[in-house]
Length: 276
DNA sequence: CATATGTCCTGAGAGC
DNA sequence: TGCTCTCAGGACATAT
Image (tube, rainbow, N blue to C red; front, top):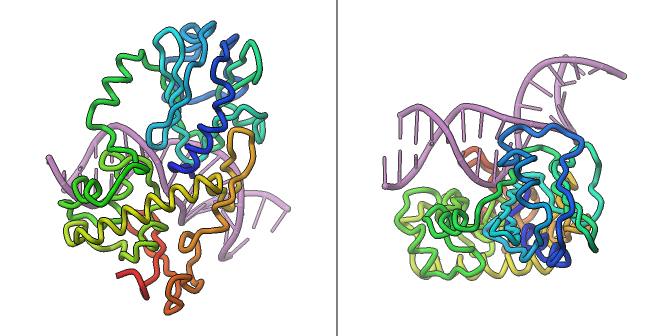
């Protein structure tokens, strides 16, 4: 699963490809479902071949590749997508391959589950999308006031609201649970019952955890899927305090065991002893 | 408008 | 052993 820290780690690993010129765009060997790559491969290739990669950015959980020729390629890795400079984990799930004229020689999109998407936009269209209210502000730059402004009037449980990318971009299931635990907030609390001081606590915990997770190069879970651009695993999974630790003692308070509940059809882990 | 649910996908693991 | 079933959760479409 890829959230802000994994995508940011991936972005940083892709930076050596900046300045490279695209020689060819290929999609071997799998058949991608039609929605995955927009527009279709031949149009995508025609638009990007001979263009240069200018910048590698991140918007929430998306990798944004800015090319010469006024084109922006947006990659959503979702559950199992990887953007790689190194060779992929296997060839069966390789979806898209950019060959460069120089070094590094390639940039790949690999996705085992096939839920990820790749979309090419003219710059103008992408800028319009960015300016729309479709995506909230980046979670790394948030604070208590901003969190309260974006989420505070909602009746939803705070854990569920944190996953809403239109409200705040970049937080997913894992880091929502970790941040709420660090802030000692019950994930079931309705947003509109959370006090200003608690929003501040949550924002500080969230930003600290995201930075910490980036420092450890993201979380590679038991399925081993997540890899950085050089196909190396992250290390933050060894520092999780609640995620996937049901039954284990709470590392904050020692009063309780971590429990697993389901909210909005997703697993939530928390400590009933210290998260109020 | 806000919120809730269904859908896509593959591989791992359970149960028989 | 090998089959069927369930589950994991990103973002979006559709329903309430």
